[in-house]
Length: 239
Ligand SMILES: [Fe+2]
Ligand SMILES: [Fe+2]
Image 1 (cartoon, rainbow, N blue to C red):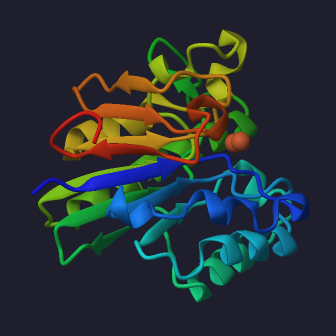
Image 2: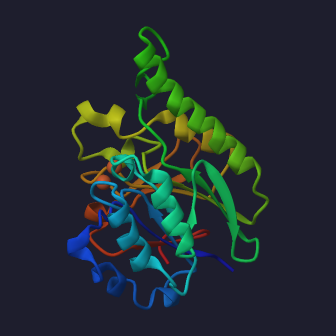
C-alpha cells in the first residue's frame, strides 16, 4: 500500500496568523498519512512565534515532521524552537533521520544550505569566510548521507528547507540561486537513494523538479502551492 505524504513549507507564522493555519489542516487524516513541514515556520525566528507554530500543529491525527528554515534561525533561538515543537509531539529533523508509520517510512533531512549548482557553484577556496560557507553545506550533505544510510524502511523521503536542484527555483532571479540551494544536497541523496525530496525557501519557484539521479523533487513553499499542503503518493504522482 502506498504512503500519502502531505507537505508544505514557508508558512511564516506570526501572532497575526494564530489559529488560522490549524483550520486549514482539518480532515488531513483522510488525505494523508504524514505531514512534512519544510522550514521557515516563523517570520523572525522568535520563541513566541515558535510557540504559535507548536500550537497550530499540536495533536494532529497524523505524524508531523519539521525542519527549520533560515528565518527560524534569525533570533538565535533555533534550539529552543525545536524544543517547543518536540514538546508539542512533533518530530524535528536536524540533519537526522526518523522512522514512522510502523517502520514503513523513513524521513531524513534538515535545513540544508546554499552554494549553487554544478558548474555555477561556490567552492572551498580563498578566504576563510568563503570556505566556511561551502564547508557548511558539504558537512550537511555528509550528515544526510549518514542519516539516509541509517534507514531500513520501505520508503525514504528527504525533507529540506533549501533546494537540492535548480529546476524548482525557476521563477526566482538566477542571481540568487546560490542562496537558495546546493547541488551537494542532491548528490548526497542520489548516492543513498530516496523516493521523494521536498523543500521550500524559493517562494517564487516552481513545484516540480528532479535530481540528476532521477529522484522526484517538490518545492512545497506555500506561495508556490497556494494551498495548505500538497499530497504526494510514494509510488504514484498525485494522490
Ligand atoms: Fe520562506
Ligand atoms: Fe527560507
